Amino acid sequence: MSDRVKLWLKPLKGVTLDSGSNEGMEEKNEVTADAALVRNRDIEKTAGETGFPVTGSGAELRRFLVRASAISQQNWGGGTISQYVALGATHDSAEQCDAPKCHPDTRKQLLSDINQWIKEPDKQTDIMYLHGPAGAGKSSIARSVCKEAADAGFLCASFFFWRGSQDRNNVKKFFTTIAYQLMMANDMLAAYISSEMQLDPQIINDASIERQFKQLILEPCLCLVESGRQLRNGVIVIDGLDECADKAMQVSILDLLANAFQHEGFPLAFFITSRPELHLQEVWDTKMMASVTHPISLSNVPGISQDIRTVIQSGFSCILMIVDSNGLLNLSAGHGHPHLA
Image (cartoon, rainbow, N blue to C red; front, side):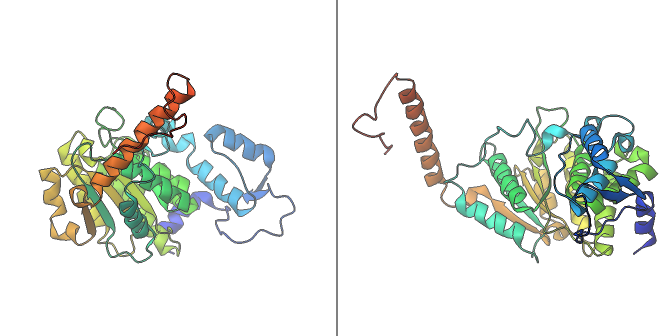
């Protein structure tokens, strides 16, 4: 273990981070942290302060306490997390939960290919880039990818850019939002990133995105690998990169990701969607980026006509069902719902 790792772990001295068995514990809600026995009331107090659910026992509770401590107010400049994190940008936020996803009978092969790529332990490419014109369904696909990856335990973080939101149309909270989710996803990353914020409080509110990426994402992930741990095929989803208002920042994000994969063992993969803007395409075409990227053009994905037909048929069926239920019109009586030609 490197000196950098030891320095990061120093504030958590006494906290056991192993994920081994705790069968010998007499009370499932007791864990050892900083040489003190933390009982139910302390766990509940921590949960109340952070808003995170507490379930499980032994190692699970221990890891929860590490994450909860790491994401406490003191590590976020003494303010609220929402000052530095775009909470509405994540796939499961209140802003995103009702946003459209793919119809279950559309984009089947595309989603299957994407999900298969996410699950591959030895990827040939570390970035999958989905591009297409406005209205082609990129965000719906990204939300569907997030849901399936989250359900399977592969999603580490997500960020949905949107030009209509002050929190989501710039990079001010981009990497801090990613870092926040990484802390929630992995106890060791929570320890590393938390300690980095303690060592350099300026990093979360007054630092370049290059510095934020290096100190909050790149170095903690590399130290995680050095410590012998891995993120299980961890993927980060970035939707609508072109909706970031600053074109130079769009390019900078891609440059940072391309450079990250020059470090051996960097454990994350990225699924990115965007319109095929010229300034972005110039980056995607560079030798370094092309070597780590699998591009997919929605214009070349087969089956779009059938998908449109499926969505229209489903939509009209829903309308007829609603009308029938209100007793305003009953086209189904004795005939069944009509099918669109």
